[in-house]
Image (tube, rainbow, N blue to C red; front, side, top):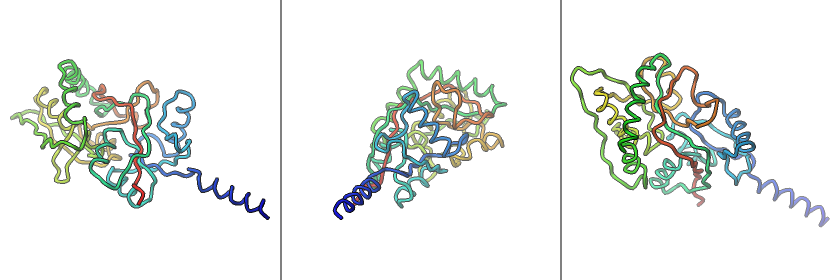
Length: 272
């Protein structure tokens, strides 16, 4: 009898202690399904050491895609998912602005970059942006903006980012999601804030173009470009040295990267 009880106890402990079926929230990827994305990350961990899977779960994550950061955060608070995975600067901002969240783990990955997305037929505009981005790198502007907006995120009051107006100049519609504060960030009252808005304002001044912002969901990025609703979209998760980009459809052109990072942070709801 004791042996049977011991076996049952061991079975229950094994089942209860396992991290199987851990649900992890990610912002939606446009070029893959949740299952394909999970399989890709598991293969990358095995063969090239790109670790976007939490070591604490031993690869047992099930990914859940969300259309917006707010939707994903509310799912975490409700308990619909166990964790969310975000760039470290974004995760730190969320931790600094919410007392309900805590860190699960920090995972180092291969270099990931932020870039700007354009429609395939708009290569000339992409090339103009690339020229300006190279100038901003060489004169130290990009580095200065990263220090201002991305160091100790959530602890500074930056104020709204303003863009110059040029009489008679071309107006560019730039889509933002606000899903990656303090990088891609739109305040509740609609004001553009944070790093991307500051980069965009400087690009507009250098190109002498007027900038108009369009607030969209993450999943609508491709549609905004293809339909002509937007000329430019802030794009993220551009992984270097990978042939197939899981978040870049074939009809989207990307600019040169303007911000790199190499750490993902898993965030969970605090235990009461």
